[in-house]
Length: 401
Image (cartoon, rainbow, N blue to C red; front, side, top):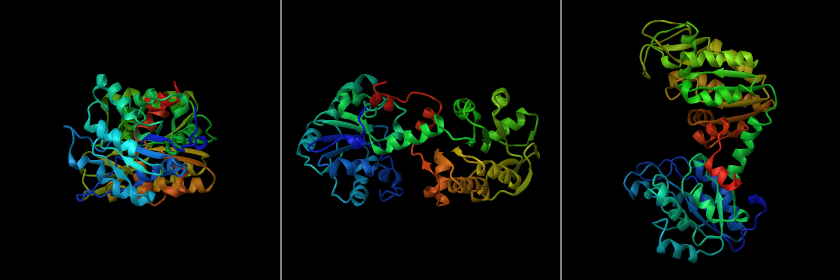
């Protein structure tokens, strides 16, 4: 498999799958450029070698073909500013006009194609995918996939297009390479003690990754809404807290497997409860298994924070996916922020820390700790599936699996 660092793009036209699915405000300005910045090293390598870059991406979820609010033209000014080059744009992604724009592209130039998902052939119409992918590949010498966030989907631009390039002319960009390296470090070569922190609302969303991690982790920390499925399964009183009543046996099964494999499971001991799901709710603290009727647990409280922090501090590898509470409401964000800070401290002590999943990443960014942890993953769903041990189509297409 070709490594992008060793490849010389001089005189080559590279079609690059990037993830420019970024948030825009009402004036169609980019409000968070993290994903664009993630692609810069790949784009710069291509143009600095003397090649030209044709960038393709989706933006949002257009339902009925082209819609102005989903046009990638809105991303071009931010990209131009970040890369320091006037970026060209073409208002389609296939067809004669696009092929001509590719032909006209000179070494050192960048062209952004229009939103791939304006065509159902990108992600929905399986029969039309091969022809669509063939047209995306047309006029280009090399394919680079640098969109980790979409690597778990077999779409025209993430997997099928790779079939139109030989093994010497398709590769991952720097972003995907760094994602895979960080995840492999956790999954395949974690230094012990290894602590996995799983938060979020539902056990059912995380069951596969938890089961995969039970063979590797020394400690499993549970947080967020899924806490109460475990508490109820163990006979505790949970009031109005979130609970998957049909997953109680699953929760007990996880605890049993963990015990058999010698994995220490940490479930919140105390919680900040609210009398309603509201930023202005009244609050009180109780043991998680003694939640009063009419109240719901929305964050971990001090005793739990102290325990979790201690476990994280003594770890050499930490994986964090999912918040400890309703992090988006300030009143219930203390626990999640405390975990973010504990990860930063563990990193400073020499641990390898990997953070993935929207809310966990948001917590790291909110606390301005992105440069204080080892790696922040850009792909929520893709990261989870890779950690579950699944083959990701966008990865397999390059590796030839």
